[in-house]
Length: 114
Length: 113
Image (cartoon, rainbow over all chains, first blue to last red; front, side, top):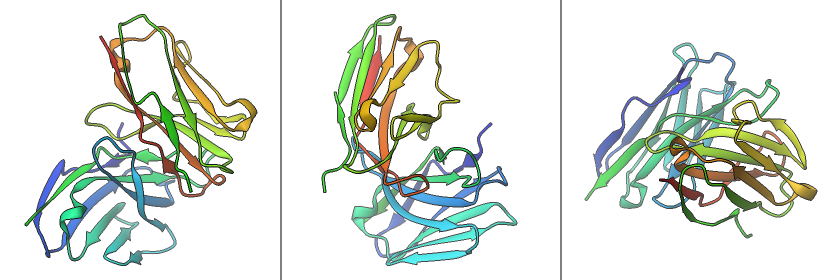
């Protein structure tokens, strides 16, 4: 049972345009959400996070939106740059649970075209 | 600041053999995690340590996998005996404390033939 779903395995966007990556979750106990970026042969790198008490968090070109009623979050990258080409993982955790491990989606491969 | 170190980076073994992976977390990080990432999937948590104690090992296949974190610093993950389905990248992550941002190492890619 996949608790975090990223339904788009890949996404191609032109340089300078907006990239929108989507993520859905099923576990209503999740209250902290993160996006990680991964290049080949490297470990995931933290990008941005959002707590369930917020519906938006911004950091430079990256904005994450959270819609709790729909159990949906999205990552917006504006403007998209060639270096943004990577696999993006959505992850979630339940801070009220006994452990802190993250539950990840399968990832979306973002390709920025020149 | 040095990142999370892992070794070896690659390992090829035959099924039923044993293998061990090593992780050195970021200095001062109390919490350490091992994740398994099968090709085409997201990372899946295997075990979480807080200092040298286990917080969560509910998804660790304990009949063949074991892990330890001696003195609350370095950690080793062992598989004995390995199966074909253990082929994956094994990622180690650390955080300053519980519920803090997790920093990942580069991973160890295991191929079981």
